[in-house]
Image 1 (spheres, rainbow, N blue to C red):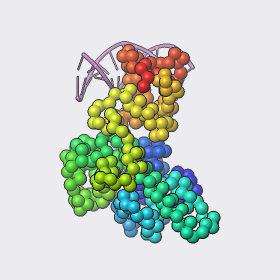
Image 2 (image 1 turned 30 degrees about the vertical axis):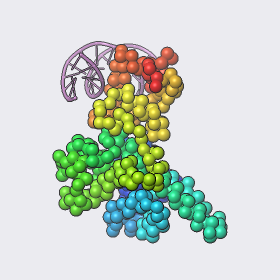
Image 3 (image 1 turned 45 degrees about the horizontal axis):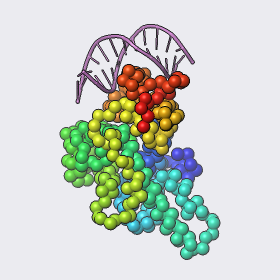
Image 4 (image 1 turned 135 degrees about the horizontal axis):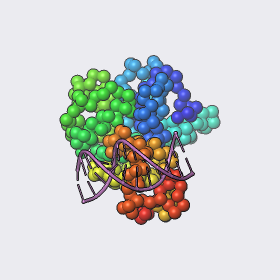
Length: 332
DNA sequence: GACTAGGAGCCAA
DNA sequence: TTGGCTCCTAGTC
């Protein structure tokens, strides 16, 4: 956050496309999670909108049509949305949009229209990519598959817990107890509301995003090429989404293989030799704690587990020992 | 204070 | 049995 275009005053409304995205890329989802008690200020990653737009409008009414529009070739959604509510876009997308940044350039109207159209296409593609990346991140953290239809009851509870924290909702896990992903997907919006008056519609909408994303992964109509960029950004299947228990060394390697998302907390010093450095020990251990459902995980414990790998010949300290630096014995 | 190293007990799969 | 969590002490930076 912090870009000039994203300064807003008023109440904070968590808008899913925005919040999910910003959370994962700034690496602040967990920080926001842990800072939950602290804030009187808007949490990082959540865009604030002027007060008058928030209470009257159901959240689902705001972002679901936006997401649906992303799946069509109609790029006018952004303009339509701007009439009714602030556009739900990552700040990054706004900053990079030539049209939005070209105010006052005085382009001829025809050319302006073309540029605008191209810009909107770019924004659509970027937003969609961000949404898919966010889902990928959530999958890694929660160790669930991206397709809600495949979730068991435990997965559903994890997803609910994550969503509660993300949007600061009251605890709703109990009212959705013993429901599988299939059950959840078969429920109507009204069913959601009946179970939770307060946030049923938001949960329904959020689930809808995940379902739509899963649909994108497996395009419904053959030859439909409008979502190529989204498919390209979809992660390859790995242990993070297979439902299999994961080993710590695998988890670390997964983080290392996604420098875009986790480079700020763990990175290669020498990839060929398998030497890596944990830049943010607290953050990495918290990620591991979430992954293993161990809220009390800390670096003390994580490093103890790493040291167990010394004997097994999986990880060791490099020849020149440095703090927070380890080496895979068998580099990738 | 944060990190490193390793012993030991416990638990779940 | 194995992998990992937890608690512990001791030493180093």
